[in-house]
Length: 262
Image (tube, rainbow, N blue to C red; front, side, top):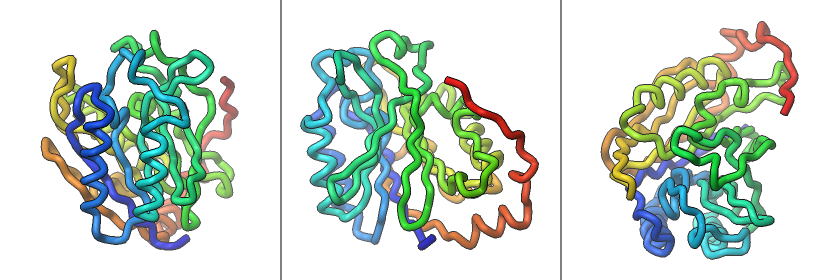
């Protein structure tokens, strides 16, 4: 494992305006001058968290995926965030893990936010995505998935355990205490680093977002967070720190062994 630099972009999002959002995020990505290997954007970064995918959904050959390919190649860094995808006549809240080579992986949000009706227009996924970069294993999830610890629980086999958990979100300020608490809980219980990237501003439904994008260490200590401001922040993770925590506190050895049935 080599040191891993990850850039978080906490931003307002222009409501249901793909072109304006791609232009805006493109400028923010261009403003990153330090070395970075992963650039993390919020959930539905090209539209905002809309329940009206008709007219906004794209294919995997569409404008936003092509933009991600171009930006990833230009910055020589992975770019990740979720967008609205239409496939086989179904809509998905899909996280894309775009490599500079143009290859990519994707993850369809497993837990759809029925409280806001997300489960009506969108279809949930049933497969996890564990990215691999510079020797790090990275668990990628979307917003509401954060509330369901079984879905992110470490495997009891050390060879299958991940080192970094990334969650991209549109998490409103009314429940920001839950956001911050759950990010810390995922770090502590899985003895991994956590990166949570949320948005700020107010969306087209009048919901306000206060950000609190965060970097958290495997003991639950908040290394960086930002409230109610746009921000571009890069953090470099070190293998030695996570190895020391797992060696000194071998709590994962006592974890329950289980199989997840879907």
